Length: 344
Image 1 (cartoon, rainbow, N blue to C red):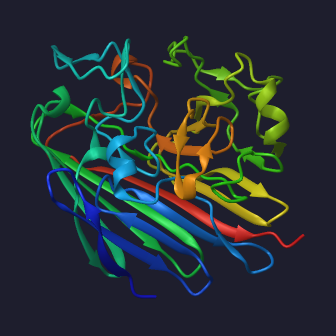
Image 2 (cartoon, rainbow, N blue to C red):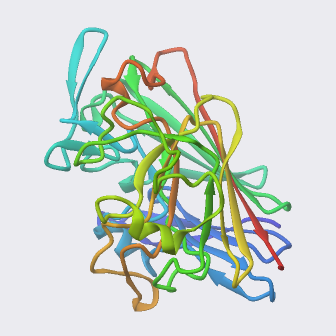
């Protein structure tokens, strides 16, 4: 179906925020805005034909301007963590913005999630482009990033990323959608089931920054290789904070199946495929006192993020897949969310 476009408020400096509404013939409807490339709404049908918005977020642009849970946003230049906000590239040490005490998170103080992206509709896709200036948030090189969103008639949301730079730099991009297949306002992950088709993960320190080793999940609470009741498993994760770790899918550049989430009471399912070597699985342990759509109080452990990406702190770990981008090269990523209904 054709993509529709309208204006969805203004930024504090008066710039218009555009909204794009993607629909298909199977009752799926997804809203994306030019501020942060944010997915604001995701309506999916259940096995009875009733639709619900399964995507956590805010009713108006003001929530996205002032809050920082990264709901539905494109995250960069560097998704996840860089320890101490420092890395060395070609013999030069760079210091990027610290927005946490001991690390830089999701691109710094004002990452890609807080930028207005140039937006257009082309070939029934939403095409977003942002040019990040040399030195923005401390990162070298002028970086031009393009992200396309496409909703297909076979119920796939396809995200295609490309980027190029004028100087050697590091780059890690993802989308930070939070969802609950019972509805954004369900308040619990009860009755959700998950499989992550990966048997290795990155052990981390108290800030969840990887230690540099890769560990096997077998025999631990982190083992999700078989379909698992998520509501029952979260309390079993050591530390009491649920899941917030990077699973190692490997094979950078190869599109592969990495995860499936289902909610049997509604029948809704989502499968994830990506060319990225890692997926950060997060169950919202840091969500507190956030008032979202319709006045809903979003709680801990009531939503899921599956963030396709390279490994956290890769610029400081020589054994991790490289996140270096050189002039003349093109960064590419494909991530697909495939929606379904299980009528059983």
